[in-house]
Picture (cartoon, helix red, strand yellow):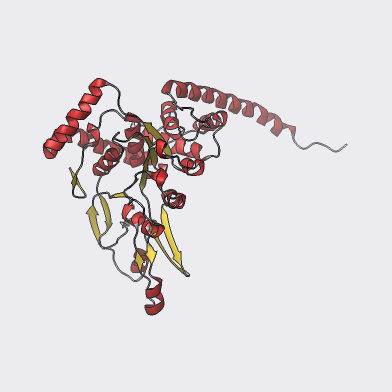
Length: 371
């Protein structure tokens, strides 16, 4: 499949790297999870997977002549221009297009990222003119940031702010402009070249550590598939088309199911107990695990969250949040997390039962009489 004029390696043809692919797919199901940081060696299909995911996503309807990809059916997310046009009685034209995949340019400045307001034009002609930046181009798509650890901390902060809030606001000299900035943020980095500050690490919702495949058969498959793609990209895609269509349909169905997925207070208690026991700072991890677990339930075509959803979500949300000593490696296995979730579930049930025992006693005491 061609995407932005380029032939794209099929997502389903990527060998192994299941955890990375799961993190990307779950973000595609629920944009509100908050993106994924992929740490690891070069040449492990990080950018290939992000680009291939964008090609899988269904086309979106946008305002035809708008630079921000605003959704005509979601007025709450419109840019300032769309609001003004509708206020003046204009009907917004519509067009369907592919989901954007935007790669942050190396050495991008803040103005290049957020966009700029033409102050001189505003003063001289009384016109407000906004030059869109990277965040505008990435709205409702995927923003890919390679070597995110080498970016200026302030630029990373801006990206994470926009990803969390879903809005980009630019203010200069009393003039402001706002546009939607809802995107899947995919950052990649090689830890050997330096790490992100803990404050920035925590703001990436999910984190995956990837390494090169060691299995001989798998490494042979990687070579065979890449050579086949280089020799005949269209033929290779046609071979994988049924699996690509299958996956695209499954993502679309999961998106449809997502709003119907429910969780219980016992699920909340399980997550809270587990995060407390692991000593995870703040509450962002709790929320990320819940959102990711809901997305995974939708992926499995279920409308209720279960322990498997929480376990897999924790596996993706914890690698960059667990405290560790220098040179320690954190490898959270499914078996360890299954045990943690089971223990947390038991603790949560015990505490809830204890509260139910105490509450009637407290309610039955009534006001004490003065002696």
